[in-house]
Image (tube, rainbow, N blue to C red; front, side, top):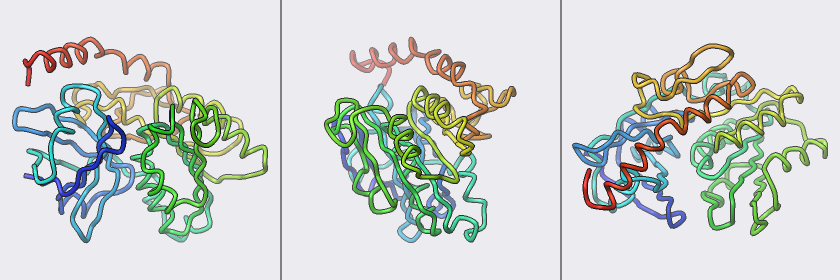
Length: 284
C-alpha cells in the first residue's frame, strides 16, 4: 500500500498528492509516468510524475477531476493509501540521457498549458540543476486555473504567464508570447510543449520554421499505460508509434496532431456513461 503523505487542492478541481513510494522515487526520471489504482477493483489510471524526492522516498502526482476514477483518487485523504502505485513507465525526456556538461549553458523554452505545468515542472527542475537556462510560458484560461506557479518560478530563469481573459500576465495565447519573445531577439536551443493537443499543434506550427527542435508529450492519449490497448497509438514520422512505451515525448514536427485529436474523442461516450454511473451510485 502506498500512503498519501500530503494532499492539497491547487484549484477546486485539481489535486496534488505526495505519496510514499521509495522504490519508484529511486528510479523516476523527468518525463516518465506511473499507474495508480485507488482501490483493488479500481480503474488503472496513468499519471505523469510531477516531482520526486529520492531521499524522502516520495513521488508527487497531480490529478484533475474529470470522471469517476479521477474523483475517487481526489477523494482520498492524507493517511489513506493507494492500492497500486506502479512505475516509472515510459521513456525519460531525451535530455536526461545527455551528459550534464552538454546541458550547462544551453537555453530551453518550455510551453505549459493548463495541467501541463505538472509534467513540465520536474523537467525544468532537472535542467536548472544541470546549469541550463530555462524560460517557461504558462498558459491557462484564467488566473484561478494556474497551478505550480510559485514552484516553477524558483527553478526557471523567466516565467511568462498567459491567460485567455487577461486576469493574470499577458492576455492571449501562448503562441503569441512565443512570437513576441522571438521577435525581441531571444534565442533558444531546444523547446518542449506539454498541454492540450490543440495547443501543442499550434506551438509546433509556430516554431516549425525557426529551426528550434521541439518535443511534445502525448501523455493525454494514454489509457492502460502499457501500449497493449492501442489507445495511445499515433502516427509519428509516418509510422505507428505507441505513446505509453515509446513516448510519451516525440518530435513535434513529425506528430499527426489531427489524428491524435480524433483519437482523444474515441471513448468520450464510455467516459460519459462511467461518469453517469458514478453519479447515480452504480459502477463504483
